[in-house]
Image 1 (tube, rainbow, N blue to C red):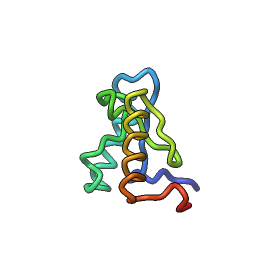
Image 2: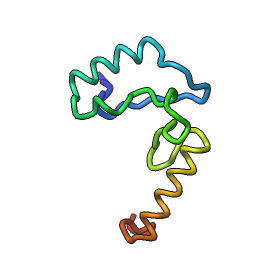
Image 3: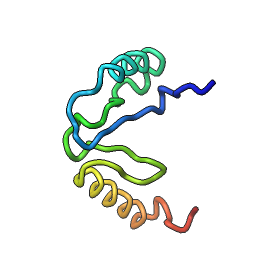
Image 4: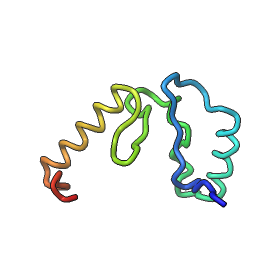
Length: 88
């Protein structure tokens, strides 16, 4: 069957607010199974606006502040030569 990889799981919704109870239970299991990810919250919708979102296949999804911040970070990486938009 198909299983969720808790080490990679992230969740977000436009309306924000606290995590649904089901996700809170997964968050506890994630902390136990992936202690290196324990500081990074699974539920992103309750974070401050600049951190309120997630990346989906390299595309930022979240608050306008999160999207703007990811775009700024990406442009800085390209300007510094850290990455190239043609390196795909």
